[in-house]
Every structure is written in C-alpha cells, then in structure tokens.
Image (cartoon, rainbow, N blue to C red; front, side, top):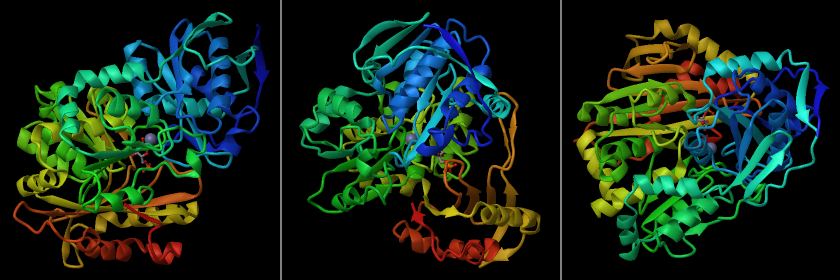
Length: 543
Ligand code: G6P
Ligand code: ZN
C-alpha cells in the first residue's frame, strides 16, 4: 500500500455553512470534490499525526462511498487510528460521544441532517473537534480558505475496508476499528436518566410511538426504548435506516410527521409521540392533544431537568439560538442562572458548554441537548421527557399548561420561504438592514418598536465576534420579529421569518397560534415586502 499524492484543482463552492458542507449528491460526486474538502480539513488541523479520528454517518446515499475516501485520506495524512461505526453508521450525537469518550482528536460526521437523501438528494461532511462538537468558525474559515487553493491531496492506495464486522484491522500504518454504533451511547443515557422509573411508566400502561423516519435513530431507539426500557415491540416505527429514507424527508416537523400528529390529537392515540431526523440530533415532541414547540420544550426541559438523576444537582445555565423564543429566558430568570443568546448553529454552544457556563441548550429548529455531548441530541430529549413524565405522573398537556400558568406563554411560529432566488433574498435582507436604525420608536400596526438590529454575537469565552447573524425587531410588549437567511439550504436561498408574542401567566393561552401572530405577519410584510419581492403569496413551510 503506497501513499499517493494526487493533483487536483480547487472548487469555488466549498464554504461550510451552518452545519458543515452540504450539497446535492451530484455535486459531491464530481471528481475529487470529497477529497479536496477532506484534505482541506486535515490541512487546517495541527498535530493530527498518530491521533484518533472518528468517522460515521447517517447511512444516507453516498455515505459508503465517502467513508472509504475518508479512510484512505486519513491513513495517508498520518492519523494513527480511525474509529468507525459498524456499516459506517453513527448518529450525530453518538459520534460526538465517541469522540469524547475515546478522547479522539476529532471526527468526520457524514450527514445532511434532515434533508432528503438519494442520488439526487443531499449529502454533507462536517468536521467535529476534540470536545465532540462542530468545529468553530476559526477552523471552518481556515478550511474554506484552503479549499480555494488546494492543488493536491494524499490518499493511501488500498482496497475498500470491510466495515461490516466489529473489530480491528490494519490499513497501511493506520488501525481501523469498527465499533458498535449504539453501545456507548446507550451506556451514557443510563447515567443520565432513571431507566427504572421509565420502565415503570411503560409497565403502568403508558403508550408511546417513536418515528425514526427510516433514518439513523432506528437501531438506537429500538435498543433503548424497546430493549432497555421495555416499551412494547412496535413502539419504534420506520426503524430500519434506508439510504433514501424510504424516499421521504427525514425532518421531524408537523409537515412530515402529520400522520403522527393527527393520531396524537385523537383519544384513541398514544399518550406520547416523538420523532427524530436523518442523523438523530433533532426531536419532535407531541403529547396527547398537545404539540410542544421546540422553544417551549427547551424551557420545559430546563425547568424540570432536576427530576432526572443526571441533572439532580440543578442546571448552571441555559443557552438558546437568537431566533428561538424567549420562553427559556424566563426559566433562567426564575432559577437565577445564566442565560445566553447565540447565533443559529450548535457550534456556538460549544464554548459555553466547555466552560461550564450552561448545562442545557436548544434551538427553535427542533434541537435540544446538554453538556453530555457537544451536539444536539434527539433521543436524549425524548428520554428526558419520559423521565419527567415518569416522575410527575401528569400528561404532557397538563405539564405544558402549568408551565404557561407559571411563566406565561410565548406564542411562536416560523415561516419559511424556500428556494427563493439568492439575489432577491439578499436584496430583501440588505434593504431591511439598511432601514433598521429608523425603526425604534415607530408604531407599526399598533406596536411600538423597542429595538431593531442585526444580531452580533460576542462569545464571552473566547472573545470572538460573529456579525450579521439575523435581523431582530423587538417591540415594547415583548413581541419580536426575526428575519434571516438559512445557512443549510442547498438550492437558492431560504428566507426564515420567526414570529413571537408573549402572553403573561394570567393571559389567554388558548389562542390559535397563527391567529395570535397575524399582526406580526402584517408588520413583516409592510417592512420587508416579501410578497412583492419574491412573488410568493405564502410561506413554503410553517412550523
Ligand atoms: C442545523 C444546525 C442547527 C440550525 C439548523 C437550522 O440543524 O445544526 O444548529 O439551527 O440547522 O439552520 P438554518 O441556518 O438552516 O436556519
Ligand atoms: Zn440533524
């Protein structure tokens, strides 16, 4: 086996987005496209010689091809060992745990999260650092700079490595160890949650359905829910990972999990429904007759986390992404703990978690997690909910209502305009940005603007600054409009509009969400002219 140095030419479009490099499979299939990006990652890292690299993906189409390339390039670049999930599989939170548990140098997470897969679907490559979390911007910027000038990559000339059997093999000077993707993760979950209490919950007749969406959480959910926790066989639906997600869209929201939602809204349905996405880091939580928004779920989990053994000493702080509703802020205030508002993207939580300043983090985009790993974690959120339900012995609906009666309710929705022409979307945002300073003090549709800015984040741990993270328009009554362009789309631009209105503890908590937020939709249209500029009469997706 020899190390080959292969000439290549740069691609101009390898800038990592919110969560790594994400493109259509035909883009990744171009000659040397994967090789250029992985070599650029390794070129941006110092001290990798002899170290351990974790590699795993969500099993989507092209996963197998990309993993073999990654192993060849890792071996040629001097890594001492690669830890790879059996069959090339690892959920994103499990990959984060493996990196931490085995003190690896870092890891390559192969996924495009909740985006569809298949020959024309999406693929992605993300680099995680030694704390188990996505590489910070300092590294992703360096990788991007490198992709623009790369002229060769190194690869070991070796046949494909057999990833089907657990065990160790030698590949050139490097060891490849194929590991059980579920085992270490299941052990970790048992250190955090009261499995005995949750077993008791299922024994008492509590019913649940978990939709793995033909994606990576199938094996994890079956082993934990149906295996260790004794939920009846069949609790986990769509539990066999498929390279195309059975031609579906593995995004656990009310659009793609509508059947489950409808079932939960009937008396005959189960007590609890949950789902996770393509790579297992997102979650959807629905109780009987009660959908829990991700922003509310973050607040509820933070307020009740002490009921689970892993958090019984209390949480030290909470962080949320800027567009996430302020529901969690009220919990932090009451607990007297730190609250942080960060830009969209889990990578921004890493420093706060490492510094021990926050325990629980969450995003409106269906992500919740804690300091147990450095990624959001879909099954973790489901297990924490189950632990809380087992201890409180109340329904999800009762727990949510009691929360609103204590803290008030933040009505919340997100309107997405997908595949908008990039130039039009950028012009819309630039135009609004240019007028922000004129807004404070103005009364729009009866609401007075308290502040209007483009969010800039100052990381309190490393002192770095991230500007232009989204337009925020806040009103005197606590309402808020946020506009930003998605950093995860692969075609055109996705304009996201986040709307929030606060209703105090003694206020009306039973309004229809879209109706409650209608005045803010009107203000957004007046300010941004979405209809006129994009020609769209309504959002593509409402969550
Ligand atoms: C991924 C990231 C999240 C982010 C979400 C939406 O799931 O891991 O941190 O919130 O994408 O990002 P976007 O830029 O598309 O709004
Ligand atoms: Zn995901």
